[in-house]
Length: 117
Image 1 (cartoon, rainbow, N blue to C red):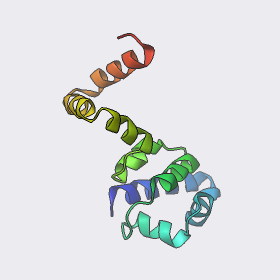
Image 2 (image 1 turned 30 degrees about the horizontal axis):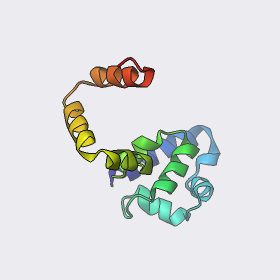
Image 3 (image 1 turned 60 degrees about the vertical axis):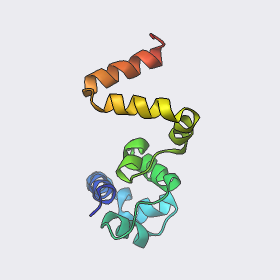
Image 4 (image 1 turned 90 degrees about the vertical axis):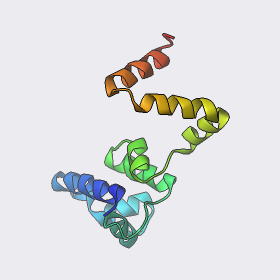
């Protein structure tokens, strides 16, 4: 089973335990895809869906779309465009951040967000 499919199935089934609206059929219908396709994705028989569909599934389950996209081996279009504007700088930044502990990355994100740099 692929990471996306197994993670999504686990989260959907957790939600279904307390809310029947999270059956495979109902989630697929709300996301605009066939239940049989979603079933195959969850079992790892099909590749993860498109960015748009992953975002719809994430919204329906209350999941972070960036997490689901990453599990599906995808990057959102807005991030792709940001990277394409400055590919060398973003490549260097990502490589440097890769070795930092989570707390250091979170601190950096907060500083950039709050304009403290």
